[in-house]
Length: 290
Ligand SMILES: Nc1ncnc2c1ncn2[C@@H]1O[C@H](COP(=O)(O)OP(=O)(O)O)[C@@H](O)[C@H]1O
Ligand SMILES: [Mg+2]
Image (cartoon, helix red, strand yellow):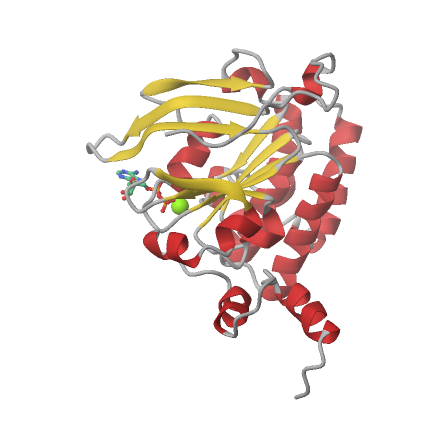
């Protein structure tokens, strides 16, 4: 199975700026079988372009979390190859550039306090203490964790733990961030905070890979989608708009499009908005009276 990642050469055709034009991750033939014999990922090819926002979208059990962990180096494949930043290196060799947030916050929260959890990553990478402190303070502020830093992480709520785990994945200031369902269990206000933070990271050049079964979330986190079918094969890859407006394709994957897509599609609109904000703008352009 192959995704549709095109060439990543610069617009003038040169590859002189190798660092920027090389894909962030190139995975070929990835295969992973759990110890009980469940084949979760089978012969998948994925290219993550530098600086892009890619969603791994698919129904429950399609293999998104397994694939994300293979891409992020949390799991090692039984077969297949992974290259990072254009070089044949193991994920461990790029730990300072690649961060993963799995679905289980306890993978990141194992110290007596949240502060120590957040300091752990920078300490592993020998980041000077003053710099690490500044990063922790800044992320705690941005993610609403400032009052929780001296608390034991296991005493936090599920949503607080997810935000603390996200902060810990960010303290190493990665170039590539792989996130598994980053806002599941997170309330509306904090969801907006997390999405704002991700938008800011993307604007600053961070490459994002987000796994989710939620088509409503995709427009906020991805410009391109790799859509997995129920059997774990790649059903399609393409720009977010193309995938999210293809109802038959989504239905074949046990998914529904975002509600606004469904609404505008039902009333026969040509140019279907993907989000509520786009829908409001579209309605304001028309003479519809309520
Ligand atoms: N630890 C595990 N042991 C055995 N099977 C697993 C384990 N984790 C996931 N699976 C199975 O692997 C397949 C893919 O799971 P997963 O990657 O979690 O999918 P998704 O994230 O798309 O819901 C599913 O059939 C799931 O039941
Ligand atoms: Mg999952």
